[in-house]
Length: 123
Image (tube, rainbow, N blue to C red; front, side, top):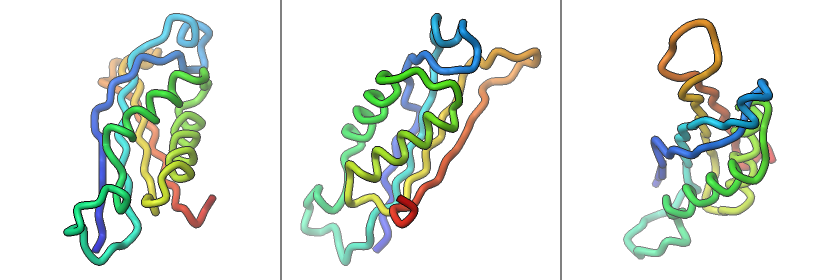
């Protein structure tokens, strides 16, 4: 059985970006985390150790985002992906999307997003 656990639209205020202003003033970031779990025969045993709690995912992502100022969204997303794979043995593959809601650029866009996909076998 294949199972996916995801958290979508997690909003975290952070201090990431290439510009000094972004790293000093901060801005809102949106995160989507999609975890494909290790195969199990069934979830009918109703045990969370075959899964990962979405509240735990949100807490971990928030902690990582707040722990350091990243210059690129790619580095932030990969750091999150690696940390979640290490912390949660049930995750086989993880996809991390990080969106900058108000990117500093000449054109108006709703957001700019980077996505990183990482498998446990790639650690």
